[in-house]
Image (cartoon, rainbow, N blue to C red; front, top):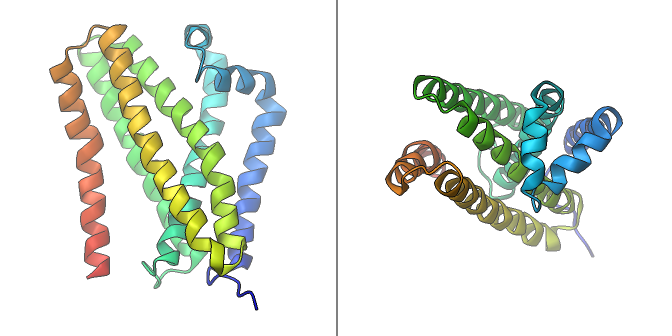
Length: 220
């Protein structure tokens, strides 16, 4: 007999309904621009074209930012409940808390980047950084979304496989994003390797260590 997983599928269904609504909104309002944006992952020449059309691209960026935050929050909530973390929260409650936290943290980081770019006259580099951050995360979410759905709505025998695959996908794309941004800043903008190393330590690794500390306390 096949047993369904323990993640509440009724509340999860509402979350994924919101995600698919956002996907439909992107396709309906910015379909052609979204196609060019995704192609930029393998065709670097398309990046400059979109950044030159900053105002038009900003509309797409806002929608994709919300989509990325929602998909990541849904995956992390599913994974946490799967490994019995934060069970005091309902799925909807944990998803909402994660979504708000991700939006606040990411917005704060963008504000820091923008301030540093303004101080050191690096606005173009900051635009490229933000673009590639968003692009890499959109590709990540395209892969991680079906894995999350399979992990939540599939039988318990396959739940662990899909959610663990999603975790490894998240880690791999995190490394791809850091290396991609580091490579572009070093080659295109001639940023010294030492500065890239400081960026990785201060704004990439440090937040992960803080997050790991919070999770370890929850486990304890």
